[in-house]
Length: 369
Image 1 (cartoon, helix red, strand yellow):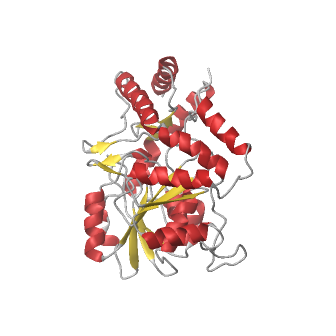
Image 2 (cartoon, rainbow, N blue to C red):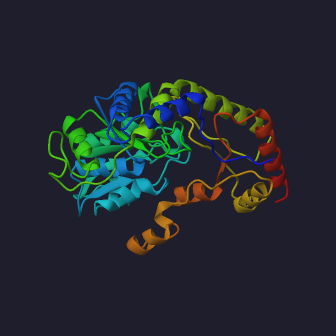
Image 3 (cartoon, rainbow, N blue to C red):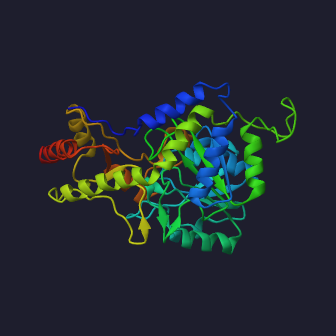
């Protein structure tokens, strides 16, 4: 048996929607993108949405629209996909890391305030694995020190914190739609905000610095080619309309995993806080430190079971160590978590038989230690 780590959920509706775009002459900057933006904004509960070609692009534009520049500092988490920190470097600003909560795996608000300096301009929390960060405490700190809040919600579409949608707590947020995400546009992302000027700047900068109503070869500011194409938007329109169905499927798979994992006492399943509606991006378990995670992973891979350590600490990535001089031990909770996490196969239509196959071999891998 070969079981993928992730798979998109594509139906005939998505294939038909993309095919219909191919029957037209408009493959970019057309009605599908506008409709997708409007639908996402309505679903999330923001006034504006700006579709782009990746979550990374969205984070970059959002920071740029807020005026983040060289010499500025943004406090963020070292336990994330590297893009959440790289986007700060794109603006020649400095990412300042604060360690994580050992349960939620999100940035720990209690560790943020000590990182604030006169150069601090914002906080960039990441809703890791679809579990929202503690936005109440983060926003209190941001208000106290007059800081921007930029939500990296790339892994958390449909998640809620105390009944409020992830992506609606800060100055802006970004969702991503890579094929392993809850919903996909192939490649793509979207910025959401309630600030009209932020939305206007992001729309201009995604389109080479053009503004609405200007000539095609007239560029008011430095911009980028970060547009979402019409094929991606058409795919996204169907997927966002299926979001409730997709989230329910993923929740069901997660519940089956958690129930069946109870027979393996060595495994710690993902934690979900009581005031959270989780949007399951990946299913990441924790192994005891005494168990060699890499040997377990190798055993599973040899059985045709895709798995992966989630995440490698950003501060220990080679070029971050070279740029900033980070060393092992700088963020001990992040490092301990990183050494013990393992993402198991997880997608909408994962079957009971496949889950049993994964867990049977996981149990064998642990017993062979």
